[in-house]
Length: 168
Image (cartoon, rainbow, N blue to C red; front, side, top):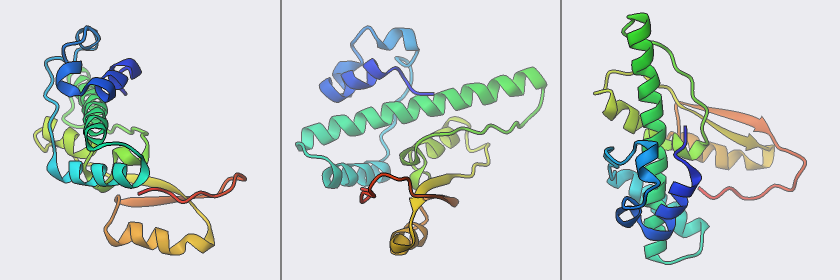
């Protein structure tokens, strides 16, 4: 579902406007696509980037732009498949299940909102945010539920590696 990694790396390095001039854009078919800036998503992701990564404001901006490209690419792929199903089966709706990282579904902003925009709102979506859980981290899970990060939270057991504090 993702755009090619070299394309995303170019956006991080050069910024969206300059990267769009690169030849990698044409083969993937995203050149004619709108990469829509979403202020609510920008605020959330740039805040996360500031808290979780070192860098300059310019670097946070190009990382955000790369996130937009990835999310638009994923939304584009999902919508193309949905439209194929509709045509091939002459059915108005088909169920599509996609598996992405939690950052691509959080608060229905990244991919779900872009899918809805592309389908003119003609879609029902449910998001599942998967996170690891250990009893001592109950407050962190409650925080995810207070301002719902997703429609559902799927808790998985902690792995054997030492736990790290998630950066949200």
